[in-house]
Image (cartoon, rainbow, N blue to C red; front, side, top):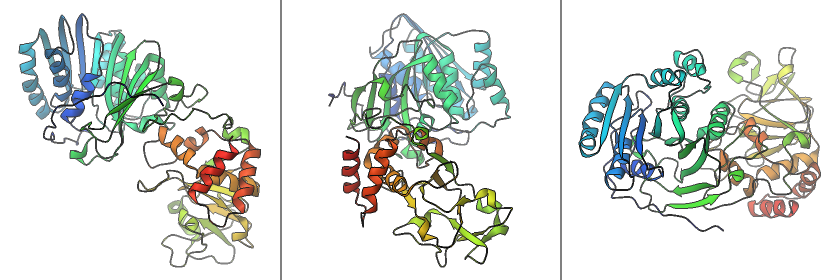
Length: 486
């Protein structure tokens, strides 16, 4: 295992800064601000710092404090800070005044829309900034909004203010300029953020990623449950190894950093460009030798359950009647499985008729994975084999929208493949791989397509073993998956 690199030692913990979330803003705790400022390495000549969504100025203060204390060495500097909230604006100006007086520095704290300002500068081909430090707002951008139109004018396609702020900051960096941002981990996977990931990879090198071990600790004063990462990027620089650091929370008491190959962070063959972030020093190879197949190469597909119950209420039944077929939710697969469930809060059946048949699957072997898992569960992916004998006399099955279904051209798959695939997906190996790019509790079909898979024969061999197990213990699954993949 690689040895840890430089340890970060924060100062004493300061009282939490009050939250301001009406505009999607969450104020940066001081220890995090100091850590972010400590990551910058470019410290020569003149400095031109950008702080979009500056809030009270905590990030700029941390950066300038490092300069004052000799951690950075500039001849002179200029700071552009942007803040849309008038109340925050006055606090920001007051907080930065002391730094302006102590350094060869000009400070411009501007009130206004950062996106409008940035787009205007980019269209004029102005790329002045040597550094950018940001804790951007978190808020969705409507597809038909003014901001979305502005972003498209400069070639940026994204769905949230946080990714828009980061992309605009990158676009305004001078060559070899550096940016450090604390942002939600949600950008690492999923189709909506693929253009943003591609923008990062096209325009920057990734130098450092910091991950907080506790999902609710980075902004604990604000009760934020989003998993966050700190990302350090360098504009127009060659990509090398990436430093991955971790800490439980913003105290950084157990900070550890380990270098990783870039190919283990973003797989060269992955068309989705997912970011896989190793944690706790794990260094799982990007694709173990026996995991050489993508899902389509195994002859399988995965889709979201097509039955959206609230849109089909007139066809749903609490208990099956003549002409009805099973409607399956995740509750039907708990424990040994049960269908129908007496007293079930949802519906157990859906009417089979011309209006519903296009939403149904022929009865057969499938594998289902819940789209939402609880954060308390040991595994993010919870898979079950669908066994047709559990539904005697039924020609069709309905799968509710909160399930993902593995199938073959909307038909069932072989018995051995179904049991083998379920066991493989329930392994600790897959859980570890999945957590490297997925920082939330949602499991999408796109995520499952992006996983590596063993050959169909190896899945069938695993399924032959799994069928003979009365109880599927985690240790036994992991041991058998390891043996199959050798």
